[in-house]
Image (cartoon, rainbow, N blue to C red):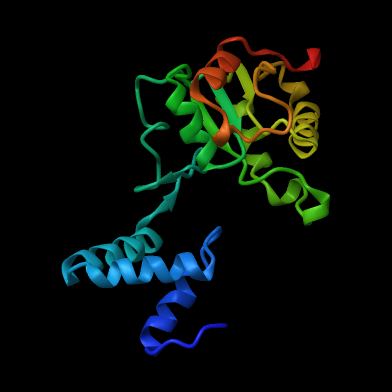
Length: 204
């Protein structure tokens, strides 16, 4: 680290906090000093919550969303339409779609998108389990809700080719979501309308 700290303990805390994405050393120092001002109970609560996050969070065995148990609350809900699957890149996108209040089916989290530049290919994503879900569970519709980027479109096309033999309806978000946008940064009204007005994938 560039700075000279009067405390090695503080320096270590700043170093660890600054390793988080989007947090530089100055912000890390401000956060560390903020924690230092709080009482020990609050500091321990923060530390314990982070440890619990790593030790207790699981990945749903059906959709790959994060969960407190082997199967997430969405997959086990009797109030969801189990004939529709919305395919998303990551857990943040599940949260974004849920916040619209416009989707009542199930999800499948790919865990990324195809990006040769980043060394991510189809084998690195949960595509085979998606195909298996569709083949075995009588799914009527698949909604592609991936980023409207070149990588997202490449992944959409790859999935489309993998799924055409299933005769399942394949649709994608209406282009109310601007090209190049990530779902997590799209406002809820626009994303909700894109879901409601989704179109057949081959029309794109």
